[in-house]
Each structure stands twice: as structure tokens, then as C-alpha cells.
Image 1 (tube, rainbow, N blue to C red):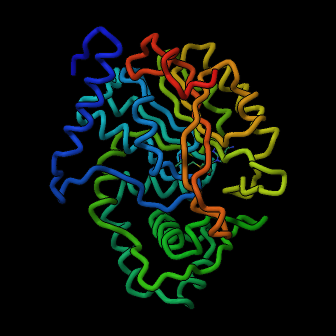
Image 2: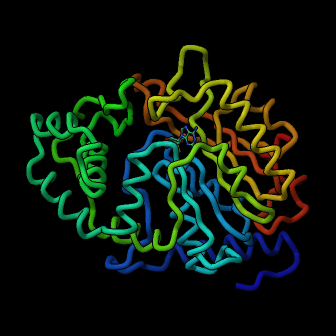
Length: 330
Ligand SMILES: C[S@@+](CC[C@H](N)C(=O)[O-])C[C@H]1O[C@@H](n2cnc3c(N)ncnc32)[C@H](O)[C@@H]1O
């Protein structure tokens, strides 16, 4: 795709392309990849707001906080449509990382052996009921094969309370059964399209600090950490046995500054608080609106402001027009 030189025309051109492509019917046998997990803080609902802020040209891509990988699936589709351009071949160019070992194993199995995974998931689907759930939950992953672990992970994710991931100090998953009548445990076409999009992708269990050993100038990195709490008492910040607290937020900001110095293209999500705004104040800080799915009080599930930071100016073609971006709070 060749974009015109004028940044404003480029943006209009790009958005028109997105609109035209959204009208094109996609055959059901080859659907676009999308999350196959329910994940706290998953970004599916924010993709429409994010898309104009993605860079259109970069070298490699990394998500150090992969979760359900909503942003990667979108970038993959945009790339297939010629709307973003990775300069290196996909196989060498994408790294998906997360600290959650079971999540990472699950992506590796979806990439490497989706037929065997679907066979195990079919068995879970056939046998699903309350006692069966607690029997599978009590299994020790050290005694299971990678395919069994991945099937257990997806099964528990789709049947547990709200798709939460929580483990006790011993690392054993401890979320109770959710209240679903007929939980859709998996969708064959979604898993197959995810598997296609993961071919050649480097999938690793890693802490975000390891980015410093990987990132180079020109790489695009989307960082979506566990959010800083809005209040001192709201502290859902742990997806593993290890907590993501104030210290980790500060260290992440230091990593962001270092990657900026190296010349990486960076985009980061977090909660909209005085602390997060202060950590990223010298970058482009924009407000996006999200509806919070995981809140025990229905009255607190309305739209909330979230922070979207980039270290490059607003337009998709890295234009100089950020002064005209009404959401830019820099
Ligand atoms: C907000 S979620 C990411 C959501 C994701 N963008 C999506 O669309 O689903 C944060 C992720 O960070 C991971 N995580 C927590 N602490 C981490 C750390 N120190 N290093 C790397 N990943 C971590 C969690 O396991 C979780 O999957």
C-alpha cells in the first residue's frame, strides 16, 4: 500500500481503507484472528480507538504483556490487508511474551499442535459439569503434557467465574466455577485462525524487563501491564503468584524511557491516574474510554477513562500534526 506524502491526506486515506475493508465479507472458513481467551484487561473493546494510533511502518513487533493478544490479532489482520507494514518477515519479526507460564504454553500449543488441542478440548466440552470442573482444576500441571495443560487452561478460562486468572501461593489455580448455562469452550475456526497467525512467532515466558535484551531501534512495542489501581483499596493487579505493584509500575516507566532512547516505537495502556500521567508526562498521553467488565458492582461498570501513551506523534504516518490532536494531553 502506497500512502500519499501529506500526513492529513494519509490519515483520511488510511481510515477510508479501514472502512471499505470492514464492509468486505470475510468467508467463515478463513476468519480474522481474535482472542480465544477471556482476559481481564483484554483490549478487544478498545481496538477501534487504538487503530489510528498504530504506526504503519516498523521493523519487528513485540507484546511483553500478551494476555489475550487482542492488539496482535488486529495488527496481523491490518498487515494482511496491507495497512501496516513490518519491515522484516513475520517469522523473524514477532515476539509475544507474558510472565504467565500456562498462558505462554497455551499459545505455543495453539501455534504448534492445534488439532491435538481441539481433540482434548472436545473431551472437556463433552464432560463439562460442576464436579468435572473441580477435578480438572485440582490437576497439577507438572503431571500433564503441554497439550493437556493448554486444554486445561482454555477449559478453566471459559468455565470459571468471569474468566479470571488467579492462583494461590503454591501456584494452583483457585477461581470457582462460573455461572454459565452452556459455556462456549472453544470455537474451531477461531483457534485455527489464531494458529495460522502464530506460525513463526516467538512465544516466550518472560518478565517485561527482558525487553531490554531484545528491543532495537525501529521495533514497535505495545505495552499493556496490569493497571495501576485507581484507588488504594482497588488492587486487582495480579495475574500470577507475583504482584504487579508500585515498584513494577516505576520500573516499567524506566524501561519505557530506555526503549524510547533507543529509538523504538512505543504504545502503552494504563489506568488514568495522577501517578500514571506523571510517569509518562513527557510523552503523548491520550484519553480513551473503556467499560470495565470485571467489577462486582454492576453500578461501577460504566465507561472509565484510560490512558494511551505513545512516544511518537499522533498520526498513523508519524506526521507532525499532533498539535491538532484534541485528545493529546502532553
Ligand atoms: C492487562 S493484561 C494484558 C491484556 C492484553 N493486552 C489483552 O488484550 O488481553 C496484563 C498481562 O501482563 C502479564 N504480566 C503480569 N506481570 C508481568 C510481568 N512482570 N512481566 C510480563 N508480563 C506480566 C499478565 O499475565 C497479563 O497477561
